[in-house]
Image 1 (cartoon, rainbow, N blue to C red):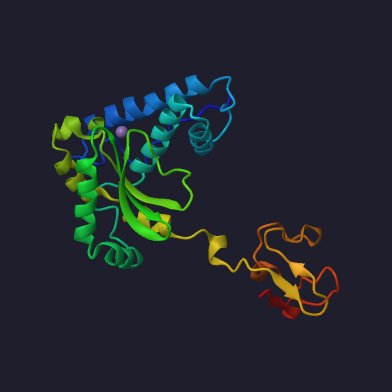
Image 2: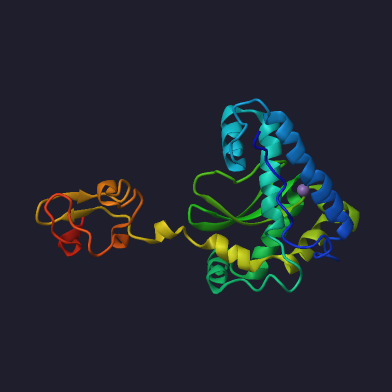
Length: 259
Ligand code: MN
């Protein structure tokens, strides 16, 4: 069967020390994260979830109310995202100009953003996660409980997360969650955050329909024009210049954006 695999850490086990020690990684990644993978594979064996991608399992189990499967799948997704929100100290770069502008609009300053995230992390009762997200186009900070995840939530794009389950910090910080969260700022992978902010390529393009002004034939980017080799999802401006209207044979320059 096709199993869900434990994604490798994107750095060495001791690369986040001393903020996150090698010993914490050995338990957090090697036991907890690995444990969710093992448990999930056991739970989905022989079910409708077997063979689905991790994101598909999160979405389908959430929808079906299959709590144990959802919890384990969501925890794997959250941990993959967490490990890739962090980088060895000095390797993560600085927040991009675009991110700083958004942070300034939403929080006033980077310090205020950090304070808001620390607040969300510390006030999360019990186990959970503290997120910086784009929600409906706006930068927000939220915490989620236990395994709850923004994965697959429409209109929500996670940018970074800090794990505030005790297993994330108890070896290094005991009960001092706030100190752990504060020190995590030295490990944020701002290059990854900037990549996560990028809009999907197609969304940047004009996905409007275009109308042939000579014959009225409509090019719909959702459908493309497979007969002439233009796959569905191709924005009008990505169609090769030599392409001709399939209905009347005029060139691209004879098309107008539909109003
Ligand atoms: Mn964890």
